[in-house]
Image (cartoon, rainbow, N blue to C red; front, side):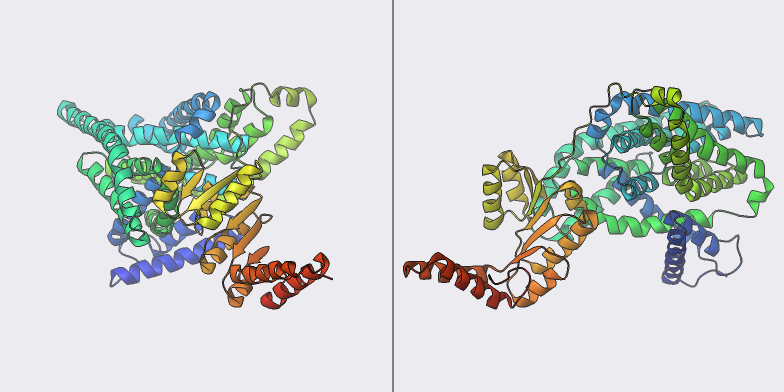
Amino acid sequence: MHGPGLLIDVSIALALALAGGLAARSLRLSPVVGYLVAGMAVGPFTPGYRADAETIHQLAQVGVVFLMFGVGLHFNLRDLIAVRAIAIPAGILQIAVVAGLTWTLGVMVGLPPLEAAVFGMAATISSTVVLVRTLEERNLTTSIAGRVLIGWLIVQDFATIGMLVLLPVFASSGGDGRMGALVSAGLAVLFVAVTLAAGSRVVPLLLRFVGRTGSRELFVLVVVCLSLGIAVGSEVAGASLALGAFIAGVTVSETEGSHQAASDVLPLRDAFAVLFFVSIGMLIDPFALLDRPLLVGVAVFAIVFAKPLVSGLLTAAFPVPARVAFVTAAGLGQAGEFSFILTEAGRQLGILQSDTYHAILAGSVISIAVNPLAFRFTTMVEARLRGRPRIWRWMDRQGAVPDVPAPLTGHVIIAGAGRVGRLAGHALDDLAIRHVYIEATLDTVIGMQQHDLTAYWGDAASPDVLVAAGVADAALLILAVPDAESARLTTQHARRLNPGIAVVARAHSKGEVDALRSVDVNVVVVPEYEGAATILRRSLGLLSLPPDQIERAFARALFEEYEGTTTHAPSE
């Protein structure tokens, strides 16, 4: 039976996705595997509760928009340019070789050439969600291997967008149909060009206008309107929702509010992305896979074995540390959201038959499930090759390592660019200590940037903003914000991203002192206490008392004010 309503369908789907995600994480698998299994559980091909597929699919389209918007938001040509000597040629060759090999195998098992071509396209693309999380978990994001993989993903992003534009052309039949598809593709390209050109001028002005209101709700609303509006405009222009959402993300990524936008949209993206993966799982018929086991085997071979092998060998051909080749091979050995989007587009256009569609989805799910094993396997292979000096010397030749800008390390992050924050910044300038600011007032950030100061607009309590400021490699975080609750949340996120960072914060009461100390703030300062103790010290100095006696009185006064917290202790 179908669910009686939207809320029941969504509630059950999300609850099962939560259970599946937790189970997957307990098995050290990607939560995506759990979401897909949850979709299968509420789908039409398995017994039990059946959610309304059309309802879930409509909500999943919002997930596609936010997924692609997030990809565009984190799209950075500078990342690609930094490793262009490796990522561009190797990425293009990997796509061509894997797609060609998969196409050949598909034709050999009986697929029509066009269907085999889409089969090959889907196998070439790796999951950004899975790969980025894997790099973060293994602390590889800022390594040479991590930078190369990020650049490689950007090449795949370009390829995916091109595939989405050209699929209708491939699917059309006859001269009139082909011409209509070409016109649609041309309109899509024109839409992209116009949106990028206009967006680069209009979007920053719009975000600044809304940002100056100081309302976080309005800022979230304008970002959501931009992502959905441009995505829908793209579909009306004959392109796809995914393409429009990606372009929307790219236009926002070049603004001062990109990091805050990422932080605000992330919860929406994650929630709706779960429904996207659930909707894909609902389309998987586990029993239909038994009808074409050879096709499933081809998909698994192409994604799990052929793609990593080709990627690793291509990387090894460049003069980079051998470790880069092994990490690249393991990281790209999976397929995810882009493959699902391409596969769904192929199914809707009538290119993919049901068994081929299910085979690609099954291969993608299996690849995500076994990807953690790929890292263990490559580590084992690396250890064995190290025992063969001649081979290892060739693979580990350094040569001209990509000129990747060194990330800022050992710096100070100042959250809040008011009087306290700017005073700290001036002192750090005098001491030649590198530092960056996080400030919630847009006009202040713009003014600081005009004076060549490194400043990020956003809420310091947002993890994305902290990541942009380089919290993972920072030595000290100065929380010069008056809101103790914001300081507490910021400290929790900073500790998660960098357990060893030192944190200084301000408070206004004993209760706030205790709350900040509970999250391991190293030093808590209450300006009123410090001011009172300083008045006492200077007053006693006017009485010409011995310095040691003055300092004891000063320390005792602070101790009494802070009531024995470890921020200050009385002198012996």
